[in-house]
View (spheres, rainbow, N blue to C red):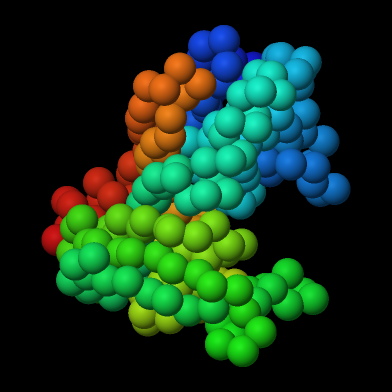
Length: 238
């Protein structure tokens, strides 16, 4: 097992009840046929009784909560079910948008092909609030606060706002090329420009819930390198 694929390298916080990690992109939370490793398997290798309290999409980076024993898992699961867990994501989206607590209520339905669509009649209640953190030329950095926790919810709701996530081609987003925003961008002869970020630009930034002792936990996950570089380039080339 490589050094990078050891859970201990991603730990943000650990006590007797929970492990909190900053999940890197490109690794699944649960079993994934396309990969030998996933967070669940790595967590159990680190702590035998470990249980995933929730999940993130394979391409999504950020804060992920793992219970160390059944009582902790149940304690977290009740809070997730009753929507008492506060989750904050950051996304880089297409378009210059000035969202100020822009709330999207759009019922979501998962299709047989693994894609999620808005369906008022058959879909499940879904709600997300969006606030712009940075507005740039043709792009925006957006804070996303999901009230419900549906599959692909943030991605679909942003697409509904005509603000698809950068790189999220599944829901209308396009790859991000530095040449689009950087003046005097020079590409070496006979070379091909690659997208600046090789996934959709979504990061689980913050998670808040109560611990078994009644204290409130607040966890923040720093941006991984690819997301950080993307935001830095947007700032630099306003």
